[in-house]
Length: 100
Picture 1 (tube, rainbow, N blue to C red):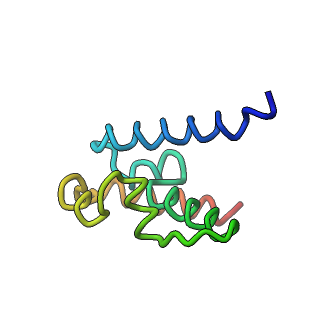
Picture 2 (spheres, rainbow, N blue to C red):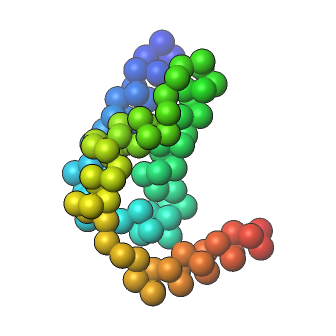
């Protein structure tokens, strides 16, 4: 099993990206409120993993991989303005996190 771990993890990650790309109705603010990470976090983690391995991947390149298109295009097509309730829920979560 161990020799297949990286292959399985890569396949699961690709499936996660596909799922996020198919569910553009799910906004990043909602992900941050519920899961404490979003598509941009994945892009940052991707860039950090590349840096750790000496691979040159910019944040913008990583975001294009995660979003399946340039970030500005995704924002224009799919991103909505965060509601007051969403912003309040996010701020409340951050306050709780900072108390821990």
